[in-house]
Image (cartoon, rainbow, N blue to C red; front, side, top):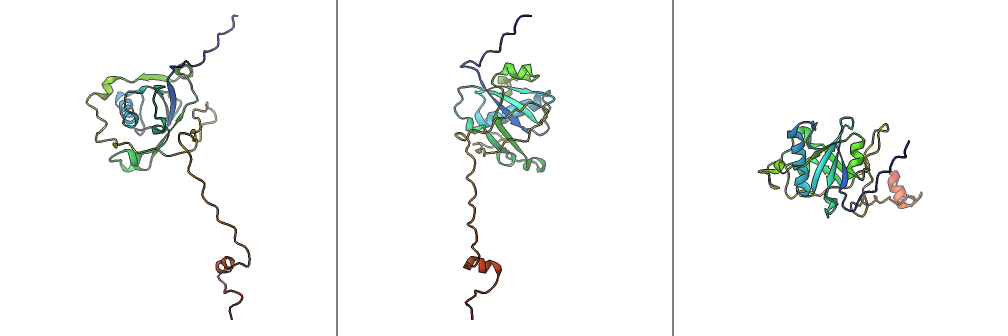
Length: 201
């Protein structure tokens, strides 16, 4: 049996791939044009429609989709991180207000890899943005900055889909200062105990 030719490395013009965890809109059905167009307009509200090439969905990958973005797109920090629905939606419902979406670099480096694993591709079409404007009644403009987030808890029975956020692009918050330990017998220790100082007459 002839040896299988290995998959070539991604070319210099290969788009970049991102994983979206808990994407907007809520409970989207990726078979329905209204839902994936609503999703596409959310992404366009964040980065504009030009660099957004395609999305991928997989019925067994609940709560996750993939983005294919132009490799030349210069502002990945606008995509990466946590998107808080009550910040990017102009009028979130009570159910939407407490939700977040998180976007990471994907573990896939090519669309071919994703499709071999069963991900279905939906190409972005110009018609999605007919009569659409970045200033619209749904998504805030300017789009609010995202915030750092840790990796999601992934299904251990499936392939990991997310890479940690690069600190050069989306640095984590500084660690909280740890208070100095209280020395027994010090004024702070005495006050904390609620007892009067030992030299009180």
